[in-house]
Amino acid sequence: MPHSTSLTDPDAVIDLLGRAAAALRTTTCRRGCCDVVPARGRLVATGDLHDNPRHLQALVALARLDESPDHHLVLHELIHGDRLINGVDLSHRMLLRTAGLVLLHPGQVHPLLANHELAQLTGRGVSKGAGNSVELYDDGLEYVFGERWEDVAAALRTFVTAMPLALRSEPDASARAVLCAHSIPSPLTMRHFDAGVLDRELEFEDFVGPSGAAYLMTWGRGQTAEQVRFLAEHWGVTLFCLGHEHVEEGIRLDAERIVRINSDHAHGAALVVDLARVVEPEAAVDGAVRLASVPRPHEGASS
Image (cartoon, rainbow, N blue to C red; front, side, top):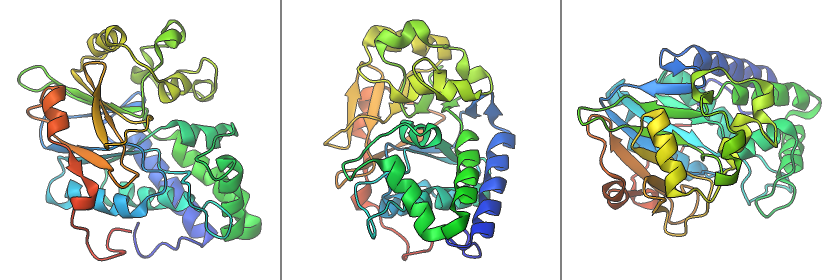
């Protein structure tokens, strides 16, 4: 987040979020509700972050966004951690930092819709263990912004609804491509899922359960190999990088083509993908980067 923008000035924060939302919607890589990036450069794929600012800093360092416009960073599930400050959740600051990164690196930072952001958007109760995360998040906004908290909350919703649902790479020379998303639908909900959703803009109904396309995609668990093969063929991808499930070891292979990632805990990981040569899922898991091993710049350098 640019140093000139205060984390506590409501007018500055509302302006930041409005500009970042506009940047997400108008970036040249946006296709419907999906960001589509060329088969060149590198992509840092991540999992759930859940208010871990140190790992966000490590990911920014790993992505090396300043080195090339073809370096990309995917982020998702930014809010709702299990650590409270003065009894409230201040994880909105992760969204503010991400909005700053979106403006600092146009077309390179891709915050994806996730179920906790949708829960906050729709008011559906959800928890990371510290209580009702939706209420604690609102309490945090009121704690920081006082009587202006609802104005800031509205600006945060604007930023969240501008996020892409997924990022997809164009096929490389071997016709391999990667898709990053928070998750994909559960097998039993596929009959209700609009698999063409990535090619269109999202409507508010897509965010709401039980059958909204974004809702089904971000809350899905228990995927099967058959289902994943269907979506891989439909979307033209060979590798899925997803989060949404706890992975004790930080990264694992699921349902043949899914690399499941957690980036929020002590064993948190990320995956560096060569977009010009997308590897097979097994090789991708072997190449995981542990975030604890990434040298970070001085505190605040990327905030």
